[in-house]
Image (tube, rainbow, N blue to C red; front, side, top):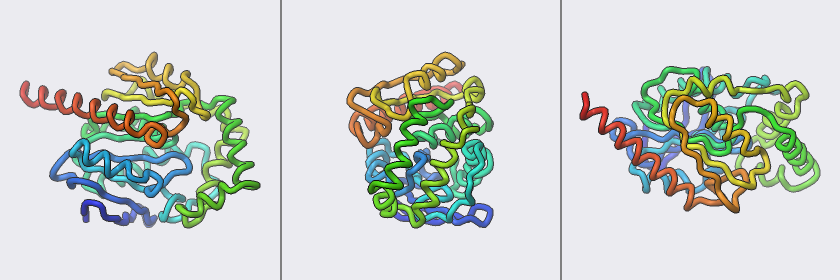
Amino acid sequence: MWKDGESLTLDIDGVTLEGRCFGPAPDAAPTIVLLHEGLGCTALWRDFPERLARATRYGVFAWSRRGYGQSDPAELPRPLDYMTREALDVLPKVLDAIGFREGVLIGHSDGASIAAIYGGSVQDHRVRGLVLMAPHFFTEAMGLAAIGKAREAYETGDLRARLARYHKDADNAFRGWNDAWLDPAFAAWNIEEVIAYIRVPVLAIQGKDDQYGTRAQITALETQSYNPVDVAMLDACGHAPHVEQPEKTLALLVDYLERLDRIEAAKAEAA
C-alpha cells in the first residue's frame, strides 16, 4: 500500500480519506505523521513532506481529515469538541491503517491541538515525540477576531476560490472550521488539561507574528508540561512556520529528530 511519492486512500469506519506517502514505509524506518491546520489538506503541505522525508530519512505520511481535500465531506455543523473526537476516534485508526510502528506526530494549528490531545490522552508507546506548530490550547480574543476576518474574506473576497483549488467541497471545509470556532459557546474551549499527561519530548514552533495565537499558548505548554519542551519563536513568521520560514522549520525538525534518535539508541543500548 505504501509507495514513495504516491497517493492512497483509507477507509475509516466507512469514510474515505486521502493520504500521500513519502520516503520509506513504516516497516523500514520511523514514520512522521502530519496533521494539517483547520483549512489545510494533503496538497496544502506543498513540498514540505517530501523535503522532510529527504532530510530525515524518515517516512512521512500526510492525510486530509474528513471534510478536507479530496476526503469525504464532514457532517455539519461540526461538534465543538471535534478536535478531541479526531484525536481519540479517528487518529488511532489512521495510524493502524498505515501500519505505524514508531515515529512522531507533527501537527499545525488545529492539527497541533489534535496531536497534543492524542499525546496527552492515549498511551501509545509507538509515538516518540510531538512537534506542535502554532498550537491552540484555548481561545484568545485576537485569534477569534482573525477567524472572523477569514469569514469575511470567504464571503466577499477570493478565499473561497483559492480554497476550491484544494478542497472538493470548499464550503464544507470552510464552514466546518469557521462555524465551530465562531460559535459563541466555543469561546470557552480549553484543552490545557492534556498538557500534563504528555509523556514524550515536545518541540513547539510559533511565529512571532502569528495572527491566530499569542505566546501565551506556548507558555501554557512550557509551564504545565512535566516532560521536556523545546520552544522556537520565529522572527518574520505568522501562523504557518513551514510555509513562511521553511528552511528554519526544517532545520529545527531535523535537529529534534536526531536528538530523539539518540535517545532511542541510548534506551536500546541500556536494555
